[in-house]
Image (cartoon, rainbow, N blue to C red; front, side, top):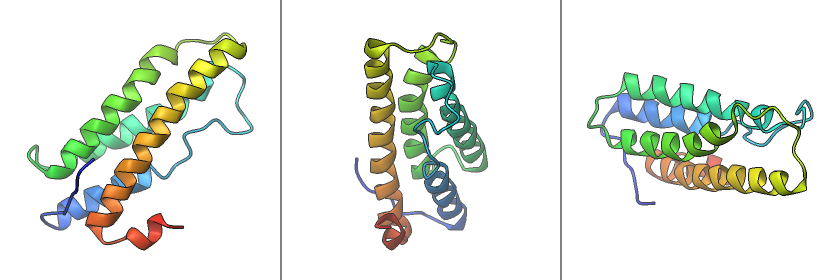
Length: 126
């Protein structure tokens, strides 16, 4: 995934905000109603956070590439599942799980890059 080192305080704060946004739980919780739309609802929160981060940073800020990668990876399952309000069966549950697992995997990679470059790597190990 590469590396990232903040150029200034603004970018450091943006990296921290992205790290926190990706720290939220992506998997459905106990309130999940069994539909894909409910399962991906939290991804919309991640996209909103990314949009806010992007608007607070210069367009050429290296953290913007990380933000864009998150938006891209999150948007795929979000677009596919956000309007699907039919309860999942075993086959669709497996597909939904795979899509969410891809988001979780990418988020973990981005968090590791941010933690390493931002100087808060010890937080990532917890």
